Length: 453
Image (cartoon, rainbow, N blue to C red; front, side, top):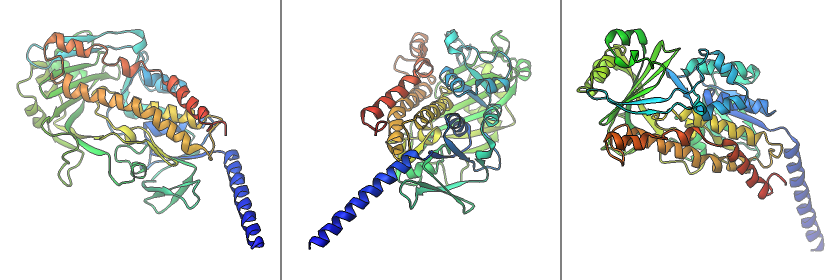
């Protein structure tokens, strides 16, 4: 009996010693990170992590880095991220000189007369960039280490590996990859999100809103008599507001092209309560007449603008992550960008939130106190600090598009009521102290002894 007790004690001691040794090994080994998705958020995160000395591999489903969509807006909060991770100069090389500047924003009635409702003030701290998405992505591609990028790698699932300290990513070609951490930057149809929420497809919802998008040459608008094109403020974005619909126009390429996004929304159907009919593509070309019919009865500038849209206009069924995810992380897997919080595009803030995610992840994973042994707690700290911030921007984007722009806000549809809602619209989005969030997350990890263990 004594021998059995001694043997059990010896076994317990061996297990404890093994656990201590495994923890020490994990703490001393370099962290290995796999990023699923090579879009804007994935590449920005990879660049930031690589420059922090973290080992990163990027897995992209396509045969090359590509971006869907025409223009991207980079607000002051995102400009700071690009500067901090060292790629702002590369981005500016891909656009026109002087593009980084405060532009303001004009809000006009979409109905007859096109009354100027409110002009968002131009202040130096609101400097931003509007540019083609492909050019922006190309700037990031130039900064990422090409030896760490892998193409034709469509993720089919993410799972815990046999080794509990590792995560395994499965790809459509039958291959797999193991890492200490997996970051899901794989967009709104995220496969990594399935692992985090524990259910396939959960979190994805149709917003009951369609966006008609196109690029229109400025010269064509001028020839069509579009008044906004020759008002002397052609570099200023604008929103035409009206019942249940609105149109955003954003000049790009030094004002030579106008990026147009016209939205039509059903308010009688709650978000997520209905889905598109089976087999309906999210993006498809439709006759321009469909768009013109949706905006019948609007003012002459809107009619002129829509006449200049392509004969077959791209219609996007806008999907979002809804209801909000309870966590952006589970175990050794975390989400960023649209995979975590895809939002309505009405503040042009979605890309900026993804860049903020990338910044916070890189700062926390690159912290000297982070290692393979404590990384789960670090990812939980990321989730805790990012969820409230991203959701606040999600909510603001919802309010802007579904109430204010469509004349249904709490202050009513009068000019004075709209001005009350439009003033400081972007201030909480653009003027945000992201460094303070990182400091707060690091302090919580130190207080809980995660960074001191």
